[in-house]
Image 1 (cartoon, helix red, strand yellow):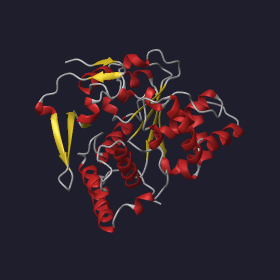
Image 2: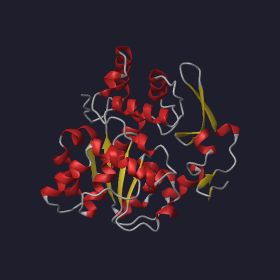
Image 3: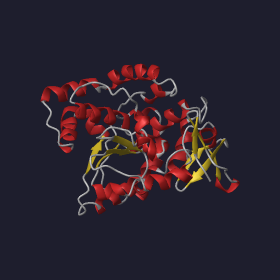
Length: 317
């Protein structure tokens, strides 16, 4: 089995029928995916060469060489990774200026480890993987990890729009159909939110005595108290930054400003044609416009069952 990059596209090795999982929503529509461990990659993305062959790269990623000053931003899909990635780069640069590159160029999930070797230190990498898919050297090198969390209802709504904009469900996609797959952890993309969150909680608890520096940031806190949270990030990164710069970074990373800035990045990176769709609303509580009462109650009951040992208090409005 091999995975190579040709003319900017990743070529997957042969896929057997046993590796293909067909996901069905409530209307019976099918999304064919390649299952790799606990993740499902849509065949459309695989065929288009948009991502490398995870059957190959997951092992390479686990063996990836890390640097002591590497910084990792880890979060479930649509939990604010782009937002914090820009903030961290501004703090490191000491200037409220958008990075000329894009987050995806520094995303572990979408590249071979060798593609990061020429990046200048400190590297700000990001991922939606759970901890067990990440480089084992992270613990040895004591790399800094910023772990983001967002309430799962707003996450679901944002993820639905993200998938629909990518055309995975089509423009007729119904949120209820997506939610059904999201709840079951069978939708195309990453593993179930519930399992992802609990796995990270377990990992963070295990690292308490191992000296691995992990900072947990809540999306809603960053939204409500941006100055305090950006300062918290600066302190964690051991960066002394003036209050004026913190304020400037907050202003530059305001949602509306980033929406405008992303249009310029889209022009500079035409290969990622949908980049501007990554920013939709960025609100707390938008889930109320999409969940029915019955769906919300069903979700709450599932939270009680599956997240009984979860120690995070989520803010929904």
